[in-house]
Length: 76
Image (cartoon, rainbow, N blue to C red; front, side, top):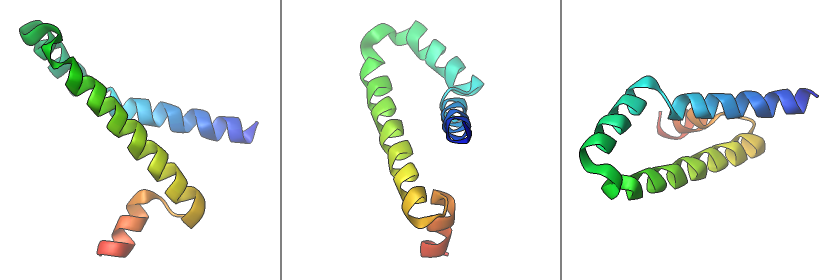
C-alpha cells in the first residue's frame, strides 16, 4: 500500500508540474490562434516529459538521490 501511495504522489506531482495554469492559458491562446498546426509541439513536449520522468526515476532508484541532488553534486 505504501508503494502505491508513493507512485500516486509521483504521478500527481508530475502532472501538476506539467499542467499548470500558465501553460494551460498559453496552450489555449496558441490553439485559438494556430489551430492544430502546433500539435507536433505538444506531442514532442509530452515525449520529452515522459523521458525526463523515467530518467529521473531510474536515477533516484539507483543513486538514492533526487535528480536535483545529482545535478548539485556533479556541477556544484
